[in-house]
Length: 224
Image (cartoon, rainbow, N blue to C red):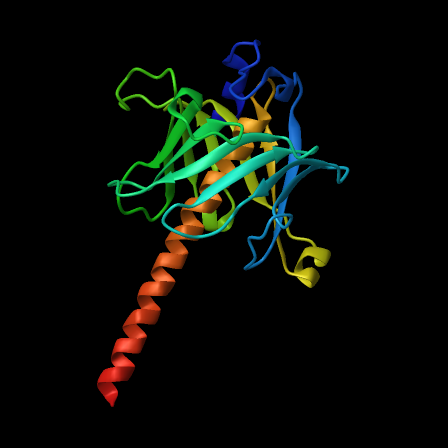
């Protein structure tokens, strides 16, 4: 089974953002944000005891959408920047708050123009395959918060997410989901992939909503 294949991975930490974010044990985190809200402070990552581990800043929509992931002390770790005018939805990641090519970390993109289910490929900066062989692959259903992150195009799972519904979250209108990260994987890197997922599908939802609103306005104008 795919779930047991992680044991075949090397015991060395897979540090992409930093070795300090790799632990020898499995880690569960909760990602939470207010529904229909993407302001700074509303999207946070905490451990199972409620301690903040990461935050997201700059989550605004637009053709030049950019998001910054910070640690619990508000130090910028990763900047995620949308790349426009590309065939596939694509975002690039950079160190800290930089967007310079010298600080490029990895890119993530959809594997096809039209997708009914989530499937995104991740290519690290040192990948020389001309995007033929991905370093990580994300599959599943983002809308159900049931995505799985694999090492390359394999059955080796490095992290997986699932919906977390509580009476409190329903009461205060929060979108909560859990992410299980397996040993030795870079947790900051995994969080950045989740933020990418949220950004890609939130942007697509906004584009569809805008198109529908424009179509509705046109129909209304014709009716008069």
